[in-house]
Figure 1 (tube, helix red, strand yellow):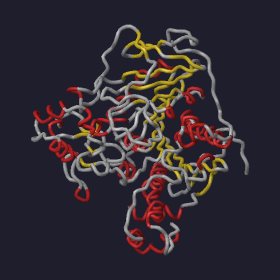
Figure 2: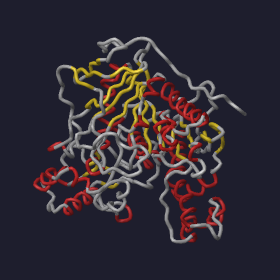
Figure 3: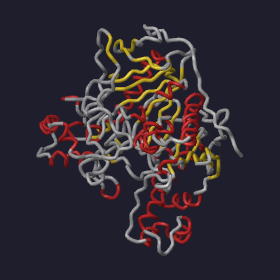
Figure 4: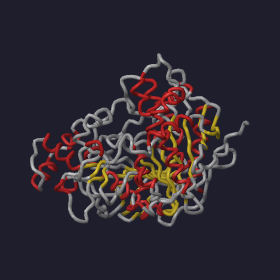
Length: 525
């Protein structure tokens, strides 16, 4: 059945009262901390580099984000603030456009220049394994969201050891410790709640969405009691959902399989830097280290070898009370509508020296698993391991989260992104991790996955329009469906409903990999 894919664009007509300039001129907006001046372009307002917290430097390194000091006059908001300190990752699909710095807690807003009523808000959380990433990459432009009647916000959060560090001297009664990256995310959402009306946004209709570590962050925010009431809908793109790739470490006691606590990781790092002891003097010495020493070569290429000196997210008992998997099993998540999914050639980390070892965890179902994953006697172990890994780490967890949400009566929608741009279709067997982002943002001309726009086809652009429209509809109503789009069915508690973005267009279907997911589910629990 052929269905014409139409995006529904909403225009509007009236500036908010907080704006003190005409729409055609450079807009000046008053927010809680002072006035800012942005840019006006093609019916959109753009504000960049707005501070939402004080620079986390000096004594504020490894402290919860502090409120911005108000300023007088009009502050320019025309350039991105620094992305957060990190070692850049070669070949990144979304390269940063700023010089990384510890002074990085800034956000950006795209908004329609005119509107008739408060508009829905979408807040983007970037990925990068919690060690890389920023808000400045070109594919993350919010222009298409503003064009289509949504106020879009992106922001930076601390990554690596700046974002996750639990040195014992930091632990004090009543003070949040360790998960500084997630504290930054919550601070940005609180900024949105306080200030977004100045840009025409509705603080009661906020959708958070993120990819990879950003998707995992969305799951953590859904699970955190400290984020309740800060958003009304959530979208998870390739964010997992099981205790697989990046399970949160315990703060102050050893974790499963002998994994060190987050405090032990921090102490080991300090010792590597020649700093001994666990008290205030040692902490002061750590704060005196240059930012490059704190990075210590940490990025997506080195994060797993550094697991004994870098914890990543941790269960601190306040912000992260339990893992996302446990939260959803116990039905303690925020009760909001959710979209969740993964890509057809997504990430997966499963290794074994032989096929026999690879399939051993399936027990009595080994024969069925070999058949389901296409493992013949001459199959390459690495190829089959990747097929299993992407299901185990990304695809089955998405179904798990959606089913659990559906069981609590929450609207839940599952997608699979299988579309590969025409320019690279001959080279790829499926849609790689993160390749859906420029389709969601409708920024294909800035995407490496579409050869930076040199070879875009009408089919590529139609797929972007459709995916973007589903996300826009969801932000506006909590339901991704809209006129001219194939109907996306809600997940049921034991269902396999799926919207698959294919080369034939968005395809509502029963998951064609259901058998694979069912088999993997048995070894996940």
